[in-house]
Image (cartoon, rainbow, N blue to C red; front, top):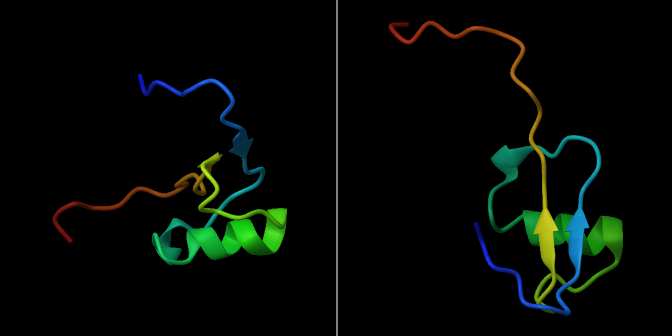
Length: 59
């Protein structure tokens, strides 16, 4: 468990986020979609797309 201090806002993104964007692009997604400062101390939770295919580990 990650302790969350009182007073911290938790924002949960709806829909699927392309997690390949990386740590540099996720704050940009916060700025564009939520119009929030990603460095203000709030907690943002993103969800990646579910995998609907099997991958051969030996391929």
